[in-house]
Amino acid sequence: MSERWCRCCLKRTVSGTSVGDALRVHADTSRTKRRQFAEERAGKVGVKLVFPLALCLFPALYVVCFGPVVVQIYRTFIVGQP
Image (cartoon, rainbow, N blue to C red):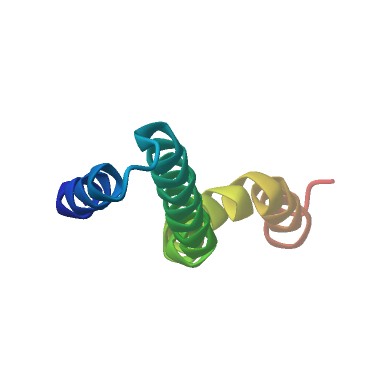
């Protein structure tokens, strides 16, 4: 990245154009590349979260949601108490 920037500055100074313009263009392209990289990584997060959710969160959620139902069924059918 810095090598490209040095080449760009050398070319600008040799041709006599403004280094400030080169800096603006370089900043814009760097910003765009960083944004694209961040969007790409954000797109992969959903896929990476599937397995931890399935292995850790969903079993605990099932116990909390269906635990009282299982206890009630046990009491009703096995023990005979309402």
